[in-house]
Length: 148
Image (cartoon, rainbow, N blue to C red; front, side):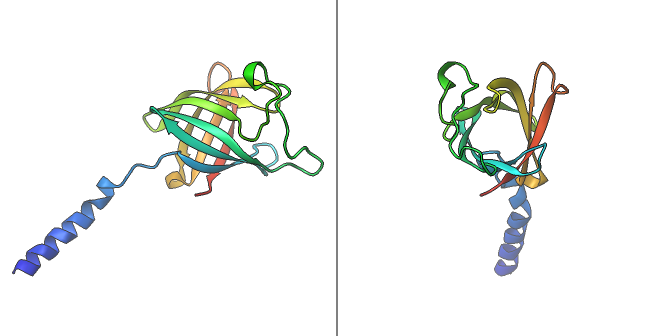
């Protein structure tokens, strides 16, 4: 009888395990896919500090003839002429329901900073990232693919 009770308890714990599973998070390594060409552009490491997410470029996938280690010549301020690889280009994103909002994202190609938001898709295997001016409908989106 004891083994039947133990088996029942174990079964109940296994049934409840998904409720205790850690919620999916954007923290990790992502490959961003260009929304125009459909080709990979970079590997990005997203980390969290005090409830805010930030993204740092770890690797670029330059097209033939492009500089493999470009500098952000179009950027202003402290990022002006800094190497793109290693640059923190995304910051301030905070969890807001199923999304991460209120962040900023820098486009190193044109040096412009946009507001940003993002959300996980496909069980955390993909990340929908949107940069915009003013309202989210005035912007562009990319889908990033988890690498870890």
